[in-house]
Image (cartoon, rainbow over all chains, first blue to last red):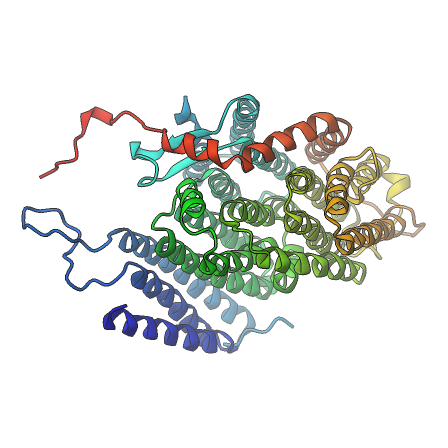
Length: 111
Length: 502
């Protein structure tokens, strides 16, 4: 594993720990931020899974003579995941907005 | 012909889009929706008949060859589940059409988007596509949940949303790990590589445990079912029936499919499933006994019976998977119809709590008979449909010597009977001064009668049922043919497109 991938992995794990810490709060803003961080941690994890990018060219097939390409599939997966994550986050924002308006407070509470 | 595999997904999607845009009188919308469901059911029944004799139907989407493109694979198991999902959506559509208060205009399209997501997860042959299918299904369910709740119930949607979003994140992470480990996301390709290169790799076990967690969360397994009961019990009964019938079963389906592919003789995932199933059965049914709201009781019964299916998976022999398949199909039909019956009971008595119901047996004999039949089927009294699946699971458990699991299953069944008896004596047989009002339209009765008849057929036609379940299991475990069918699914290029695009 190259240094670059190591750094990205550490960032992803930091994102996960901070995200879980935030999701455990009661304030809706913290929960939203936590969900966002968790989503991005997953995206970074998939990015790491595509292997080291050092010495490889972008996956665009041209007559530039490049022989080794970065694996394009994880990038496609991340793109889809970002779109889905965006949709879910937007939904959560509206949902929390309604919840806050309904309960007249910015904390979630089931009782 | 294989291109037809896409119909069960495309059809509800088109119906959903049309119903979103087409805002005419509600009678036309309902008629269109019911018609579309009928076509879906007819087509998926044809798929069931076809897969019963022929090998897996494989469609390479966009003409891309198997390990690179996404494939749809419909085997007998998937076809049976698609047909059952279609029938449940049809019943819920008929039930919704009979409701006195017109539903939110977006309810009908969202139901169909959910059906599309469910059918896609049943028929996909690609790991990432399974994630996308789950997301389609979940997004539709989030929207339905928020639209259908009374404003004061919105807080119950919160745990559903949060836990499912976190589950989806883990699902995606598992997808990344699968891609790194196998270099592919295609089910057939994964199983091939598992067979030839990494039979004893411990990383496979880590991934399967992660899968057990994710699908267990979606299915409502023991430590992870917190999101389920309150969010289901606050839904209107029609949508509750749809959710209870379809959503948790997709988790069970994915569990069976993925464990079948990724199992490499390491007992850890099965052990986790076994322990979780014991607690699911016992804790679920005990919690059902503590509640008085009929939808709560049914939701906890749902959780307890998820435990039966998880037990069947954890024994993991051909016979136990066969029993699980049979039990799954029975349970989809029965739990939805019980939710719909609960809806009629709530209409008539104007209350959700069984303590406030009463006199139903004298004044609504038809409803009582329907409830009685479905309750007996849920408990698993011999000629009814629940019995056969349980019998097969128990038989396989005895042959594998897992007597603790069998004991828990039997205790849980007896307690299910108790919880149904409580409903019966409280709501149907008691002499109270409850005034019943006639609110229920005949369409709602038609939908419940249809589901009850289907469950009776599943019970009395156990010969055909077991044959179908056996065929589904054989096809599921015959990975060699599956791989061969997926790999040879070459579609002729459309319009002679070549690859050297400059």
